[in-house]
Image (cartoon, rainbow, N blue to C red; front, side, top):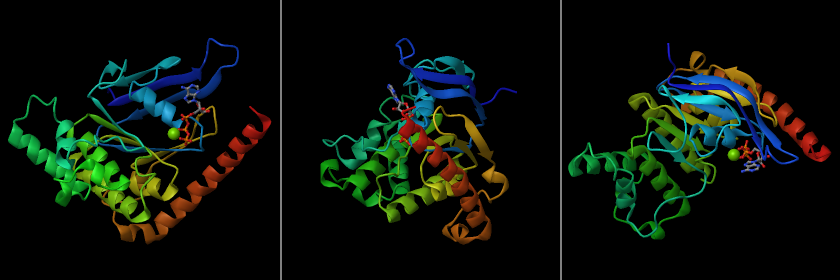
Length: 268
Ligand SMILES: Nc1ncnc2c1ncn2[C@@H]1O[C@H](COP(=O)(O)OP(=O)(O)OP(=O)(O)O)[C@@H](O)[C@H]1O
Ligand SMILES: [Mg+2]
């Protein structure tokens, strides 16, 4: 059976034609099914963003193939929605118009339906009451939430989220984790989510891929969906299973972080 997303023996070397290429991704293969939330966890600089950017078509593969819904990924398009760490909203538009902007190309929807969708995702990010605010008048954290709502509203087949909550304060972060998990469950979103935060990874994921230090290989795949219920709430974070999972993964990532520091010292 064909998989929704297939990463087949993908490697990446930057500056491969020059004398000293940086080998970033080393023969990674994985399959992602529709409706899954997959989290990438790994030491800084190991290649998580690079792999995600290749899935998004923003970066080319050096070897291997990436197949999304039966077609090889050749470049960015509306099939793939991307959210990055930094705010990327349009400051000259109102909050609601920023989200509507994401729906501009949806010729299959009439204006009323577009408004309904825009408001639905604004509610999800907790900005229902701010729709008429100018974006340059709201806080950075709120702008990031606008960008998230816009990307969801555009209705991509897969959402690629690269540390999207990284710059948010703890409360906003927790709120959005809850909302995202809930939404993925209700609307069967397919998501690849990159984070440094082990608790965030455990809370959001159906599966976690732990990467090694650069060049990134898959060190371990953790089937969170077999260990935690699909619906997640804040109480779950205090459960024994959650705590044990978190500690085990922290142990794994610590060894890798150490290795990557040693590599840096050696200048490798
Ligand atoms: N365009 C590029 N040209 C050359 N090297 C690059 C390029 N983009 C990334 N790299 C290098 O590839 C390696 C992996 O980078 P990447 O951003 O994928 O890591 P990451 O795992 O996302 O790290 P972080 O957790 O810090 O975001 C780094 O050593 C980086 O310097
Ligand atoms: Mg990164």
